[in-house]
Length: 556
Image (tube, rainbow, N blue to C red; front, top):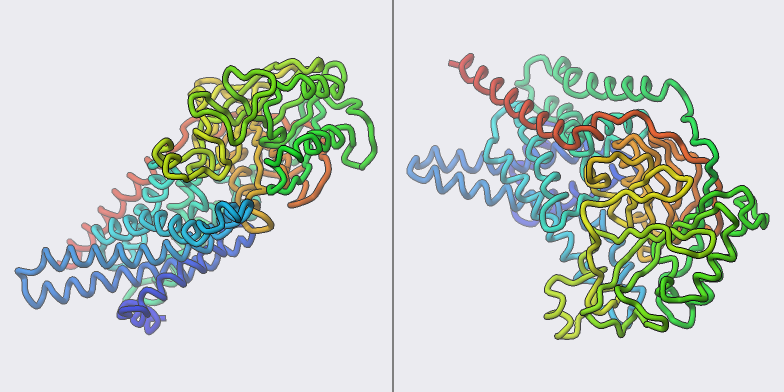
C-alpha cells in the first residue's frame, strides 16, 4: 500500500492527470444506480496522496532555499487545484454524461452543442473540486488529521456547489452513504452535506492508515473513524425503521399517470391533441389495467408539462378535464402558463419576450376550474432560460425548450399548495427536488412533497435513476411523503422514511394507485436545515486543530 501511495505522490505529467481523472471517474460508481460506495475507500485516498505530492514538492523547495518558501507554497496550491480539477472532471464527466441526451432530442438544432455540453459543464463543476483540493492543501497537515482537513474542505465545497451560480448539488458526495435504507435514515439528522463529512472520514481512513507504517495503533484508528461510525449509522437506521410500515391518511386515494411520451414528440403541435388524449385515457385506467373511470380516486397526478400547450386558454381542454373528473376528484398536473393569455395563443416559438411564460403545476376541480397554481421558481439554465437571454437570442441561440424569452420565475418563497382533500403540499418541478433545505420555504411545514418532472430529455441513462434517488432523500430529510410523477419514469410514491411503496419503472406506460403516507414528526433536519452541518464543520475543524497542536507539542 505504501508503494502505491509513493507512485501516486510522485507521478507527474499525463500520468498524474490520468490517475486523478480515473479516481474521479471511478467514484461515480458510489452514486445511483450502482451504489458501490466502497469504491471511495480507494479513490479518496488517491486524492489525498496527490495533495501529499504537492506538499512534498513545496517542502523540497523550501528546504533548498528558504526565500522561495512563499512562492513554493503558492505553487503547491496551484498543483493541488490542478489535481482536484482532474479528479472532479472525471467525476462529473461520467456522472453527468446523460445531459448530452437532451441535445439529441432536436439534433438538427442542438446536436452541434453536444460535445460542448458534455465537456464544458463537467469542466465548470470541476472548478469546485479544484477549490476544494486547494483549500485542503492550505491547511494540510501530516498524519491522519489531513483526512479530516479534506472532509471539511469537501463538505464546504459541496455546499458551495449547491448554492452559488444558482446551485447544482447533483451527486453530492454524501449520497454515497444513503444506500441501503438503514444508512439513508441519518439524512434526517445530518442532511446530505453533513453526510459528505462522514463519507470522507469513513472512506478515506482505512487505506490512509494502512499506507503509513508509522501510524501508531492503526487498528484502533480504523475502528474509531470507519467501523464505529458505519455501525452507528446502521444501528440508528434500524432503530428508526423498527416500528414498521407507515400509516396512511384516511379518505385519500391517489392515481399517478405515467404516459412515457417520447421527448421528440412532446413539442410538436400536431402531436399535442394525441398527448392530451393519452393522459385522459390513462387517468381512467387503474394500475391493474382495468378502466374504472376514476371510481374511488380522490386525486390524479400528471407529470411536468403534461399539457405542452396553454390549458388555461384552451376551453376544450378544460371541458375535457371537467368531463374526466367525477365529483370530489381533483387533477394536479404539470402545465404551461402564459401571462394574460387569450384563446388561440401559441406558446412555441412565437411567444413574445415581454409576455411571461411559466412552467407550472395547476390543480383543477371537477368542473375543469382552476383551484391552485404554482409557478416554478428554480429554473434550469440553458434548458428553461439563457443567461443574458436577449443578447444570446439576438445572435441566434435558444434554450432547449425553445420558448422565446425563456420561462419566468414564480413567486418566492415557494408557497404551499392547498387542494381540497389533500394536506398542504410543497410543489417541486423537475430538479427543484435536488436542493436540500430549499424544498420547503416559509414558516409552514408541508405534509407532502409533490415532484412533477419530465426526464424524457435524458433517455435510458443513469440520469433518471440519480434524479429519483436525490428526490427520495428530500422525503427522508423533511419527514414527509414524496409523490414523484414523471413523464417517462421513474414515478414513485415514497414514504417519510424513504421506503418506495409504489413505482413505475423507466419508460413504463401506466398508472399507479396508492394511499398517502402520513408525515412523521418534524426531523432534526426539517427543523434546523444545514445549521447542524455548519456546526459539524466547526466542531471537526476545531477538533482537528486541537489534535494537531497537541501532536506538535508532544513532539518537542
